[in-house]
Length: 504
Image (cartoon, rainbow, N blue to C red; front, side, top):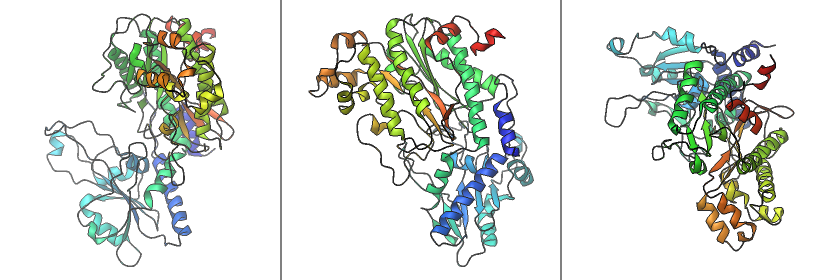
């Protein structure tokens, strides 16, 4: 077994509550650089271009809060983190395509840094820590790259510039004083590097598993302690404490969504204008979408459960509709499967359950044609996961975004590949902004049993989300939380988790 595989298994199997999170091997980022180098050289060969020039990325910079001197907690830019694993701000990183050598450029810090912020590390520290070939200062970029370049004419820089299809923002190409001394290629690097991030190595998977382990454990802890009369933000606080205290996770993958009652129909609840501040009531459902980040790699988990620990028949109907869809998708996942087909499978199973529960009436195939599923699940089934919660690569060149309701919200329309980590997060929500027009529409009004729909008016919604690895022959669920209604009720009543501990 390769060293990296042994390290990955050792890291991923570490007990989440050990209070000593495993050390992350920098071989992970060395491997990521080698993967890029191989892919980029192949791309250049296919285009009959020489293997000359440098990949050059600019790391993130610290940001202050508006005009103040309050510095927000820094988190590295994701592409830079992928290639170099550098946690400090102000760096640049280069890879020499001809030789494969990796170079970091550190900011030259002022002397008073040592007074206010700690020891000024020598470049040798960064070379050893980040396992790169060379480290220089950022004011030496021009001279060093010119000296290293073996091609003719001006040295060529491959800069990162391309569209993020989730945010519709463009990545920012590196800028530095003296860049006019270089030829610049702004189109080649982004698609190649993005595709490198799509399928994960064993070491990457180990970090995603660690993030899942500690986040799963935190979700269970919150589930156990949830009671009517609490505030939603107290659930968020318990999660953040557990993942930081026991997992060393200083960052979350995204803003926590702690939605109860009718708030659970708000897909991205928890933002500044809806800040997880409702009081939990007996009879509410709680939809908690929270995931910790460990050494840049994330998790994204949603649990939905009754605040009082007991499912009503209505809650069970909606919950099991979503759970059946969640389980069917995971069972069907394997390389070559279309993610659009998986979304439709989830929709169909949810619609079947709603029809059995008399919320909907009529022919299931007709409902699918009229996109009734999108009324109850307006978001996509899931997204790629890695260093970013919505990891890039969902729509590479040649993959078109669907245009139909629901399907157009998919963050990828690709076929699954071995090594992808993708969230499976079907949901069923009662959202007035969607239900009212659908029940008035000439095409869809016939499918709704208005009397029963009205009964669910303030129900909110259910989402069940797991992080799933596509394997050679199927899939592996990396998330470890109670899912069946009886499991949730047992855990909320004080039972152990995992349940097999009870027989130990």
